[in-house]
Amino acid sequence: MSKIQVQPDHYADLSYDSKERFISYWHQIKEIKKSGCSPILEVGVGNGFVSNYLKSRGLDITTVDIDKRLNPDVVGSILDLPFENNEFELITCFEVLEHLPYKQVPKTLQEMRRVASKKVIISIPDRTLTYKFLVKLPIVKLRSFMFSIPNLLSKEHSFDGQHYWELGKKGYKVSAFKKLLTNEGFSIKSAYQIFEVPSHHFFILET
Image 1: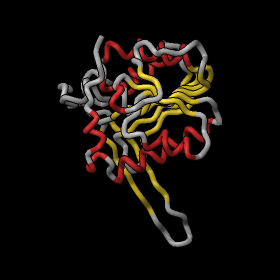
Image 2 (image 1 turned 135 degrees about the vertical axis):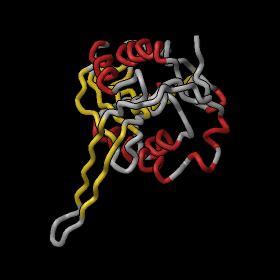
Image 3 (image 1 turned 90 degrees about the horizontal axis):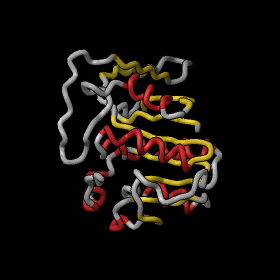
């Protein structure tokens, strides 16, 4: 069984919490609050920012991670979540799945669908070519536009010590990942890239 290849000091490094990452945190929190679900399970503690913030606001959220050094509420693997069927209404899994070999991803999806009674929200690194436009005209509010184009010359992904795979790389098309999600029984309610951080691709799923 593979372990997620992330060291605790990776999250403690000041460079980890960039402006872009805090923007991603904001979107994570927004989607969690918008779901209206409770209780919540966060898979992958990271630096604990999102779960600590939500706990401070009174949300019922439990964290699980395979690495006890990250101080999760529960130590356990996403490949075999130590929870009952439908124990949580919502499961979140942000920037985690890429730390496992892609062949293990179906098992992680099965586990999250087993434990979540309503929704699963995940985000995955996406290296698809993206073009962004920000327009400000008199009287008209600020408008943003973004579109992605599959890169026909996309490179193969080599394990970099952190990520085994990333969307947009050769062999990891977004369309194929969406098909995997539906094959595992999820309904994709929405999928989007963050305008400020298009490398973070969000998928809002219902079980």
